[in-house]
Length: 487
Image (cartoon, rainbow, N blue to C red; front, side, top):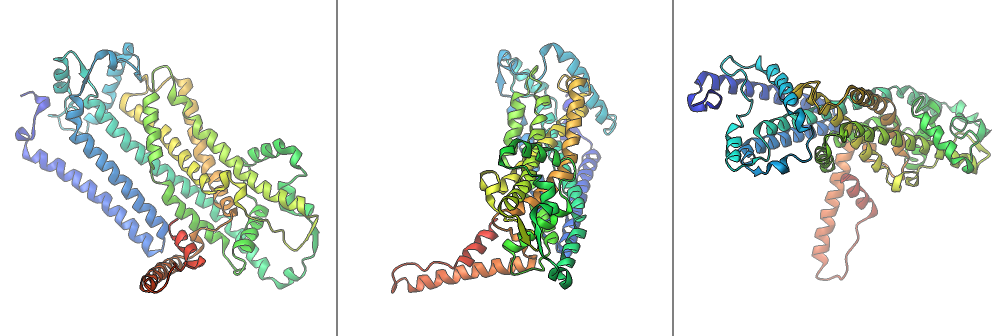
C-alpha cells in the first residue's frame, strides 16, 4: 500500500485520537466562546445583537453542511469524467502556465507542512487524487473536478464566510462609533426643547437663514438638478451628517411619527435600528451565493474579471451615498420652496417618495450587496495569495492588484464612516417607523397582544359563524402590529 494512501486501518491509534481530540477541543472552544457572547448580550438586553449572533451560527452551520457534502461526495465528483477538449475551455489560467501554477501550489503545501508530522509531510490534506485520475485516464478522459481542486474550493468558501462576517462586524463597529458621537446633539436638542425660555423666545425667522437650508438648499432650484446631484456626490466625503442635519431630521421624525411623545430619544432609536439591521447584513443570502457562482463562472483567463468586479461595490457605494445625501437636500428644497418664513423650528416632512421605488428597504439590500462583494474581493485575493502564491496567474499583474486593494480599503472606510451612518438616519425619513422604535419588552408585549387578539377574533368568528353571515375584520391597530412583528 502506498504511503500516501494509508487508511485508518494502518494509522497509529494515538495519531487518530490526537487529531480528533484537537479538532474537538477547537470546536468546543469556539462553541463555548459564541455561547458566552450570547449570554453577555442577553444579560445586557442586546436582543438584536443576540439575533445577529444566532445568524452567524446559522451561517457556520451552513458552511459545515457544505463541507460535509464536499467531503462525502468528493469521490463521486472526482470520478465524473469529461473529455480533455471540454476541460480545456474557460480556464482561469492558460495551459502554458500550468507548470508555473504547479510550482506555486507547492507554496501552500510547504506552508501547512510544518503543522503535520514527519510521516505525513507533503501529503494532500484531504486525499490523493491519483485514483480518480487513473480511473478517468483509463477511459481517455480527465476528472470533472479533482479532489485537490475540491479541497481548494472548500477552503475558499470557508475563507469567504469568515472574511464577510469579520468585515460586517468591523463596519457596524466603526459606523456605530460615529453614530454614538451624535449623542451630544441629541442631548443638546432635548435640552433646548425642555428649556421653557428658549421655546417662548422663538419667533418668525427667514427660512433662508436656517443652518439646514444654508448648507443644503444653496439657492439651487429645479433647473439646477445636475448641480444638486454633484453637490450630494461630494458631500458624502466630508461632513456627511452635520448637527443641523441631525436636529432637523430628528424633529421631522418626532413631529410626524411620534407627535404624542415629544421626549422621544431619537439617538437611542437609531442605535437599536443599527443593531437590528446588523442581523440582516451579516447573513449570506441566496442572491449573494448566486453572485459567487457567476463570478466563478466568468473568471476566465484574459478577462481580468477579478479586476473589474472590484468596481461593482465601488460604484454601488457611491450611488447609495449620493442618493442618501440627495434625499436630505430634497427635504430642504421642499421646505425652502414652500415657505419664506416659519415660526419656531424648521420641520421637514418624511416620505417614502424620496427613495428608490418608494422603498427605503432597498438601501439596506444594496449595502448588504456592497459589503459582501467587497468581502468577496478581498477574501479571493488573500485566498489566492496563500493557496497558490503571489505569482499565480489567477492573482494577475501588479498593476491590477494594487487598485483592487486600494478600492477595497476605500470601500470599507467610506461605508463605515459615511454611508452606514447616512443610511441609519436618512432611512428614518420614510413614511413609517421600524419596530425598533419600541423597547424590547414593549415589542414583545405588543406582538403578544396582537397574536392573542387575532386568536380571540378567530375563535369568536368560529363560534358566531353558524348564526351570523360575514366576517368581522380585525382592527387596524392589530393588523399594523402584526405587519410590524413580521418585519
